Image 1 (cartoon, rainbow, N blue to C red):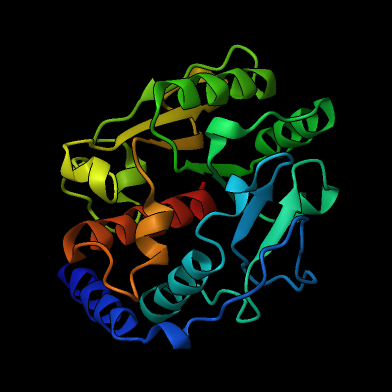
Image 2: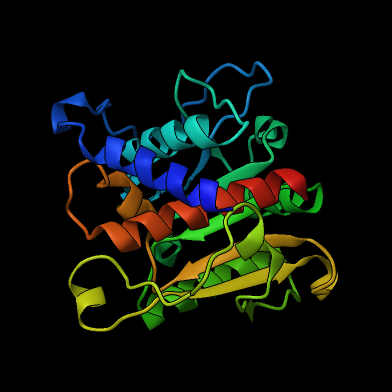
Length: 246
């Protein structure tokens, strides 16, 4: 475990020394764009209409996370980049993990609701990130209850296996990036288990009052402090390892 901590610190230090010009900037896309499927692990982001928050922190978050996955895990993420899918695209079912950004503005269609429900029930794992106002929670919860009617959204504590899937996370007290975190806003972590049974697999992990994507996006620029940035990578890597092993 100590080796993992040291490895992450070294890789994160390397990422943070990269100049901004070294980042691979891509145009903002108003539509999904997926790489051809070849069996390799690919970081997947979910698209939704009417609001561009689905794309926030893309593609730098995926690029930086992919570098660290390559360096300290046995995963070899697709070097061509990441993919973006509609929730009702059947090709999404080929990918075990998906990331949803800014769910406080997510208002899925019936087709998208059905697509995401099918994905989750067939074994997909959803990472929800980047929202922090009570009204954003209400929008997210309304949409998620359409996707999984009757699902219990429960707060997770440090003993949950997702926080020990690769790194042994020591604390869930991680500040929201930027000014809100400086004012004391701390992350809260929630989950939805299969059949509402905590003994079964976690289907959805929810980062509320948190934005690990923002930490990872800006890790090469030194925008945020090293310690919470380091923690954000630990959460991200743990989520991926948990999703791939459950």
